[in-house]
Image (cartoon, rainbow, N blue to C red):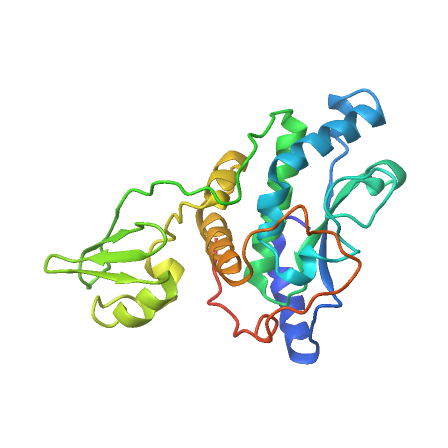
Length: 273
């Protein structure tokens, strides 16, 4: 699959949503073809070591993007172990399969197109970075960045600035400024007043920057536009709901229950490229 034929993914998920369901016993595994890595380093041990180093720099942030069932799960434990596939990043297929893939196992099960497409793009960009042999900077999962105010001019609506004075959001019009706990709440309360198109909170707010650790990581990897904003939004919501991943307590063999609404949440407004 390539991003250019994500339409096939939508078709499959339409059927899956009609006839199927997922829960904490499932996971989303993404394989990314990476034969180019054998042209960068000369031996399997060198390749494995380099992948392990790069993954270690971002793993806490990546696992903070997951619910509890994926953080404490014997099928996707932290770390990269060349001889054990049951880790968040599995490199066995890179050496033992003719397909030469790296398998990303950390994401929770889902039938939501936005979650899957954004995660595929993220995984692919991480492999692109490995192939380019460009080291990543270690990222603190609790990182908070300063976000510049965003001027938004809805067609036929009211001009306003969107601010992110962490951890809240603020909307400033010519006459007043209002604060909100999260962006979706701001959209629900202000879309009529501001005469927004009503497509969804991300597109109506022009895919804003959140200023969290995923903002930094997406910038490094080159994940942009709708995918970046969607990943940042999910990171905000997942860390608020489940906290940040703690290396000291991760990697249990036991399944952990997520909140009851996690797998039954309403489908988010579909984002398009």
